Length: 303
Image (cartoon, rainbow, N blue to C red; front, top):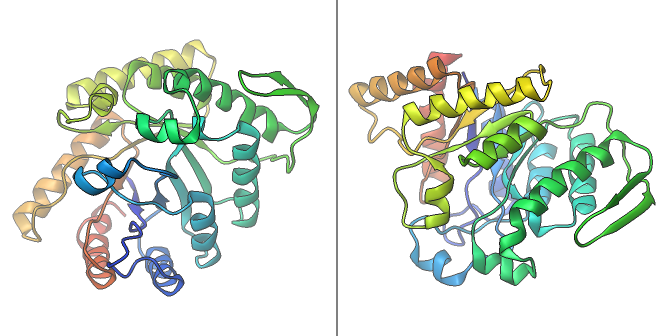
């Protein structure tokens, strides 16, 4: 089992939003057993959600932040979790991702999703109801752009008549598709190198509720369907199944650690290959302490 850990969100009063702090975090993750450090994507979140929803959070630009993380680490892979594809022209996304992948020495994992926050789509000037079609379109174009050569493709809001994006990538970054809906499963099987469902209890937001996986039985069914679809599409390459469970050790007791690791082993038995853990702490010192504890007590068991 591999582990991905969050790079803390840029809270103004948590000591996370400074170059010095991010360097310290990058070094700590790089020295830990973590395989990946990940960030999220919210260019213009709804203010009510940001300040009132328990899930509300800030985010730096993912490509800029991950470039900084990569420059201050040596082995840690860097991941968008997730980049909302419809927010950007797919050629811009392909260029930014390819640049980061090249300059990080091939350490990018491009985690993508269709998005769910209607107010943010409106701020971006992107039709919310078209997000699924725009996501599929972007996945196709990104693959074409990375392959090299001229791209001929007319999309909903662009028309490439023989444009040649660079750099071409002989070994492009893996694309992990987020979301737990049936459509997300199909999208991951068709275009992805990995699938990232959200394991959540019923949520207040109907869009999150529709796209989440709520039980291990449901997860097992979707993994089986994913494998069927990959076979239909003729895909036989390595494939990652990464989950971000809604649970986390309630305390640092041995009983809680054992319970948590038992749940990880249950996911592993279903076919999950990597786990995304979110360490939420109020400041930098608490985060570093929690990271060191998680490294020694949890990740070390699966090293």
